[in-house]
Image (cartoon, rainbow, N blue to C red):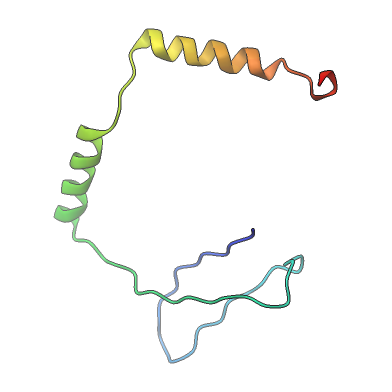
Length: 80
């Protein structure tokens, strides 16, 4: 599925959405929602909540993840 997301300033009663030439359909659903604006203080509070509650990993877990990623990058599709 191709999705186009744009945030535009509303300066009149009309908004124009440009569709890429390779858009795979002749019909599209358009949903217009107001953008919620947050004050700098609200943004800081949200960041603190997200960062304080975000999952963390230790150095050993990170090294293990990187090892698996390197191993998977050696895979060749033709082998399957």
